[in-house]
Image (spheres, rainbow, N blue to C red):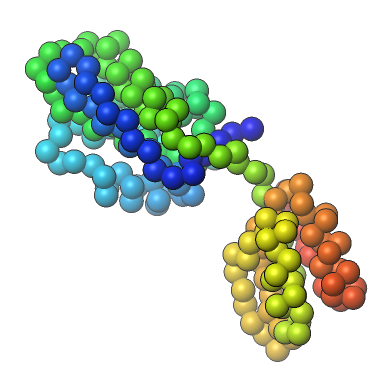
Length: 196
C-alpha cells in the first residue's frame, strides 16, 4: 500500500563541502507540484533539482547537473520509499569539490530518501467517486454521517429537489455508506458509484 506525507518535511546535509537541503510535501496534482517547486526553489543556489510522482504521472529535473544524476535518483527514492502523491526538491550550493556522476546520484537520491524517511507518512486509502441526490430535509442528517465513513463532499450543486453531491469515499466503505444513505433516506436516496 503506498504512502504519502501528512505535511511538508525537510532534511539538511553537507557532502564534501556542498550544502544540500531536501524539501518534500504531499501533492494532489502536477499543478500543486509545480507550485511547490516554484515557491521553494532558491535562485541563489547552484541547482534546484526536483522530482514528483502523482499516481501514474511523474516528472523530474536535473537543473543543470549532468543528465540522470539528480532528478532520476530522486524519483527512484520516492518509489523506493513506497511514496505517491509527493514532490521532492533538493537545493544544492556547490562547495568547490566535484562529486562525479555516481557521487551526485548518491547525494541527490540519498537526500531525497532521508527527507522522506523523516517525514510523517500516512497510508493512502483507495477511494471511489460517487454521486447522489439529497433532498433538502435530509442534508444535515446525511452530512453528519459522512465522517463516520471517511467520505467527503467534493462537489455540491443545488436544484429544485435539494442537492446533488459528488462524494469521495474510501472503496472499502462504499457499500456500508450506500446502505446507510438508503436507510436514512427511507429508500429514496441512492448512492451511485462513478469510478472503480
